[in-house]
Length: 176
Ligand SMILES: *[C@@H]1O[C@H](CO)[C@@H](O)[C@H](O)[C@H]1NC(C)=O
Ligand SMILES: *[C@@H]1O[C@H](CO)[C@@H](O)[C@H](O)[C@H]1NC(C)=O
Ligand SMILES: *[C@@H]1O[C@H](CO)[C@@H](O)[C@H](O)[C@H]1NC(C)=O
Ligand SMILES: *[C@@H]1O[C@H](CO)[C@@H](O)[C@H](O)[C@H]1NC(C)=O
Image (tube, rainbow, N blue to C red):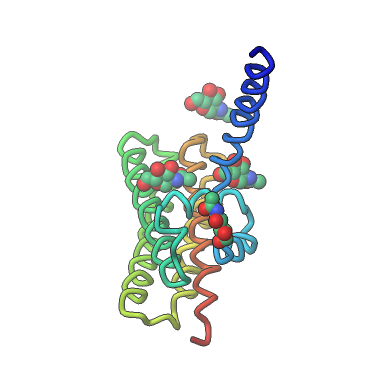
């Protein structure tokens, strides 16, 4: 009887130890693995793509939709946050934020165009638009050096990462 209990305990313990690592490591498809290996942060890439339940059953086209949608959503909420910050900004940070806002407007417009292209299955300029969007986040990051707001830095970094994922996926369409 006690033997059985201790065996049960061991089995239970194994389950408890094993399950968190299972939960944090989604069953990455070959495509997601291939894409994320080409980005600068594999973990961020996998976590971001798998935040959308469609990622696991997507082909390249589906994954591109997932990635551009994520980039669009996060760029839009970052832009909204910058707009909020602008309302109460001191004159010294006003210029920086205004510059970032312009960068984000360009980035979002590029992502929108890419998304429309995807919807009409026109792939030739996708990588260019993803590149434009990435540049927006990079420019904003450079502008914000010395501006003390860790949330904005975090959000901008995420948009930069998401745009990089878009860029990697877009390049898979080259020549198709
Ligand atoms: C993970 O993916 C592999 C290969 O696609 C598949 O054989 C396996 O059943 C999957 N496992 C889970 C838990 O979904
Ligand atoms: C990569 O992304 C993960 C998850 O978002 C994050 O915790 C980690 O700090 C990132 N690593 C680098 C080097 O940016
Ligand atoms: C991207 O935006 C979503 C909400 O739109 C949010 O849940 C998620 O945390 C954001 N990702 C990052 C890395 O900021
Ligand atoms: C940055 O902001 C935080 C909280 O808003 C503050 O505690 C910190 O001293 C600031 N750092 C600098 C270098 O201004």
